Length: 253
Image 1: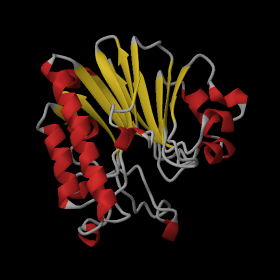
Image 2 (image 1 turned 30 degrees about the vertical axis):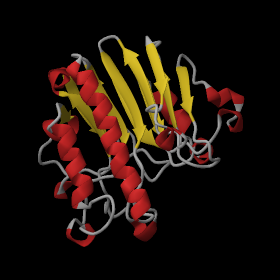
Image 3 (image 1 turned 120 degrees about the vertical axis):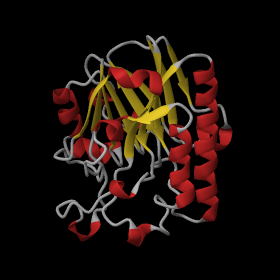
Image 4 (image 1 turned 90 degrees about the vertical axis):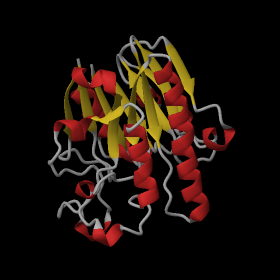
C-alpha cells in the first residue's frame, strides 16, 4: 500500500496549480491532504471526488482555515473525524481510518507561532492524540500517523537549526513531544531508513528558500514499532510543486 501525505496550503489554489492532475498520475492508494482551507461545496464537483477513490472531508468550522481530506481506494472499515474534543475538532485537524490491520491518522498539527496560547494549544493537541494512540497500542492495534507535524524533530531536519532555536516549530518543548511519541511505540519511518539523509518537505515562499533548499522537514510518517518491518521506503517528492510543502509517500508492504 502506498500512502501519500501533502499539505496543499489551500485546495482551491492547489487546483489551479495542477495538484490534482499530479495526484491522479501519482496513483497512490491513499492520499492524505492537510490545510485544505475549503468546504466541499467550494470545490468544483469534478474534483470533490477523485476517480476510484473514497473521499472523507473534515473541514474547519471557520472558512478558509485548516481542514484535512483523505482519499482512499480501499473502503475503510471504520472512519472517525476528530479526537472527540471540541476544542480541537472545530478546526478540522484529524481523520482516522481503519484499514485491515492498522489505523491511519491524517493529521494537521497546530502551528504555535501566533503566541503562547496557540503554542499551548499545539502541545495539548500533541498530548491528546498520543493519549488516544497509547490506548490503541495497549489494545494491540497498529497505527500510522501522517501529516504536517509543524515541528522539525532534530537539527538535521532543518537548514538553520541554531538560528531557529527560539522559533516555534523547533522549540525544545515541541521537539520533546516527538520524542514522547517515539518512546511510546512509534518509529519515524523516514529517519529509520535514512538516518543521515538531509531532505526537507517545507520551504517558506520568501527569500527563494526552495530554490536554495533552505527548508524544514515537517511532514512525517510515524508508524508503530510493529509495522516498521513492513515499511519498504519513504520518498520525499521535493520535485513536486504546487504548495510550500511537497508530498511524501510511504510504501507499506
